[in-house]
Length: 76
Image (cartoon, rainbow, N blue to C red; front, side):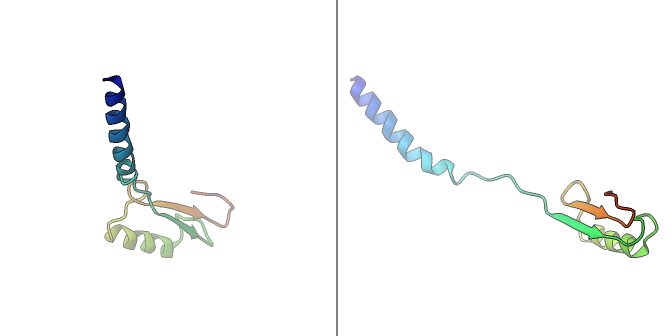
């Protein structure tokens, strides 16, 4: 009897294991990098670009990661 339980358990585990490979994978957020000549607060092109991104439904930190590198050498 123990042999049958082992065979049934092993068989069911062997058939269920490949199904776990098709489980939904966590979604990765896209990452966008922006190189800015001046500081991000003073650059009008950056403000309009980020406004256009918002109009498309992307919110920084929620569904997209935006990294800014500006001329003073810092990230923001």
